[in-house]
Length: 277
Ligand code: SAM
Image (tube, rainbow, N blue to C red; front, side, top):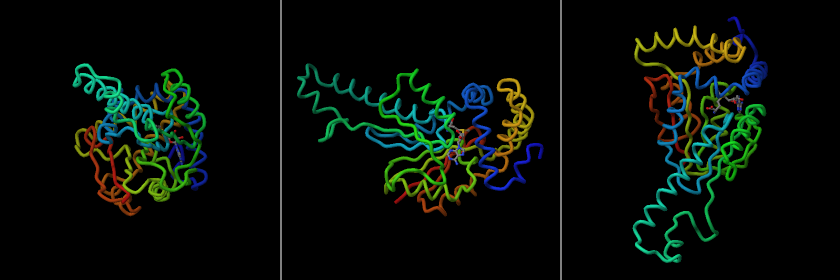
């Protein structure tokens, strides 16, 4: 191809992926909105609704980039807690402080259970943009940023309740290795969740989508980020990624159970999930 990704050896692919995201980091969020017409926000919201995380949960968001999944995770839990708190205070007419404090579900013997999200990405430029975004949103507590490779995660075994990877796994050189690592760092009972571009099932939508992605995306990349090649890579990597069923099998091969997927926007994106038992 023009960009030559197909012919490059593995180590070379990793280097090129690094360059792509280094180049686009500053414009990444703007480009995401422009290219998906804002729909990536709905896909990410859907991930959180299916996840339905509980207070105190520990999340690892791999290939987390500028932090969208981690922010939504923390906001989702805070919103649920606030709603619960309001319900409880309404239920008790004039509660004493003792009654209120025993009603809080976020407290346990060691004090409040803090929900934690770790954003891990191989690219420090992407993380830098994410950290700036977190600061400007006032989202600091419970959040940390770690440079690391999905194929060799810098974490001990069985540390996390949930592992997410959103639009990241197709960039990884050895997907089976990344899935093994996901399983290793999850606690027993923990959940693996992946958002990725997939195969459009409706033939009419498929041809519209093909035309849009092959023609519009590199043009938008050139106009907004001054970077045609990076966005051409993006389209090619989406094309080469295994379809829904094949990827489901790969997750099962890595040892996950109850693996299933939902198609979003007619299969433009698929949400796969599975459990470590
Ligand atoms: N998850 C974010 C989101 O949904 O907006 C960012 C997705 S972005 C398309 C892909 C990210 O994968 C980039 O930030 C890139 O640096 C990261 N990445 C690529 N290869 C990786 C690897 N081997 N390990 C960890 N992250 C990787």
